[in-house]
Length: 221
Image (tube, rainbow, N blue to C red):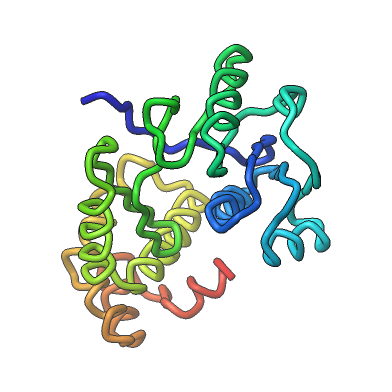
């Protein structure tokens, strides 16, 4: 296995995107959604990037890339169709110890970006180690069909339950048994069917009286 799989925390970290086209827009959007401080460098940009910059969601430098753009950067993404520029960015980033990804050029990357399925806080990634993006895309679609929005609700509930249990000074080692009992009791199935009263019954059977799905979900809003 060539690539070491991790989930990278970019919250509050400066991330550079070089390129303002469709690919750069997708990269900037994902980074911003993860809480990164996104800086886009490109003479031109899509309407989406321009609007995000105007709203303060990202910063856009409307000019060509310069090596100084890497100062203070944690992660850089090259999203241009200029092979020479992509190679310069990759080399500049490596000399500065900045993690770098060049779209569709795994040989220039410190990391590659997997296909992504997200259901709230549930994140499932698929990687073929750069061998077949088409296969990764197909597997992602299969996972999207398999894992619906009920998983996002489930994780919201589980998170709220965990916070309440910790507040009540339950021993963390007891949580695993309780959470397994919730899953085995059919909590996921009740959420899939939109059956909140049924979810309440599962919660109360495992955790005791007074545990209500709607109230728990409200705590996560």
